[in-house]
Each structure stands twice: as structure tokens, then as C-alpha cells.
Image (cartoon, rainbow, N blue to C red; front, side):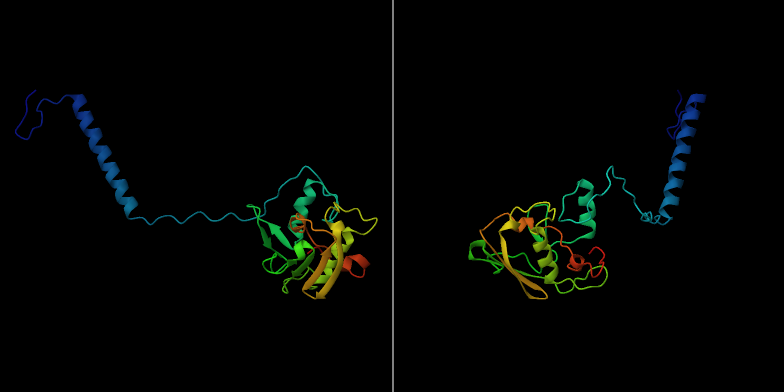
Length: 206
């Protein structure tokens, strides 16, 4: 092979020429694409999806009262339409919901070794019909569980309740016949509106 002064071979065959041409074309194409991309603004992020997600369940709800026995799908309904005094967090701690704070010995909500309870409620909660949520609703729920003939999910712990007193619209107290440590967690259950006891008004779910 003969080489000229510039270092290029003088006797290039067809294969060599084809290789050089293909390389030059690829380089030019790459450069052009980079130039076009550099001069073009970044595309906007995709729009967030809109609409309604429908989740199908294999069961039909059978109980719309969270204080009564139900099946798994009832739990889905209860957690969607009812609130509780406090809720359980994934780490096992309790977070206030309808209550201002979770009662404890430290804040004075639980005293006398677990026999005396005081729960202070939020004053900014309303049922779906606009009726204020009060301590009377909590009293009704607690009394309903122990009402003879009512099909309660469980009366374990609740059976120790006595002397339930409404101290004001947003404060309720009661006493326990004996201390029951799990009762704090059991009260992370949903409340029922007092008005549904007498039938004087049909109140929507909270």
C-alpha cells in the first residue's frame, strides 16, 4: 500500500471507501442530532392522570354500623366513612383523630391506675349533615355497645365501663370497674351519631 504525505493510502479499495463513507455519515448524523437536541427545550412532564379509580371487591357490605359484626369489605366502608377517637399508626402508636390528644397518665387523661378516664374532643368536627360532633355522640356509642340485645362486635373491655359523664360539649369522662390495658387500643374504633338512637333525625355517616 502506498502512503501519501498526509498519511492517507493512495490505493484504497471499494471496501475501504465504503467504510470511510459510513463512518463520516454516522459522525455527521450524530452531530446533527446533538445540535437539534441542544437547541430544543425539554418536553413538559406528562400530565397527571385524571378520573375515578373503581376497585372491585368480591363481597357485598352487610353491616354499616362499625360497632356490629361485619365481614372484611365492611372494614373498607367503615374506614372510609367513619372516624374514631384516635387511630393506630403503622408503628403501633396512637394518633388523635376526633380527640384532641390520646389520654395518658402523663397528660392526666388516665388516672388512678387506669380506672379514671378523661377524653377531650375537637371542637371543629361536624357530621355530614352539618351537625356538630359532641361528647354526647361518644357517650351514645359507648352505651350502645353494652345495651342488652344489641349485637356488638365485642364487649371485651367495654363491659368494665361505668359512670359515663358528659362534662361539656367536648369533654367526657368515665370510670372502669377494673383496669384493662388494651382498652386504649380498642377505642380506636368508629363512633356512631347520637341522633340515630331515637330516630329523630336520619343523619348521614360522618
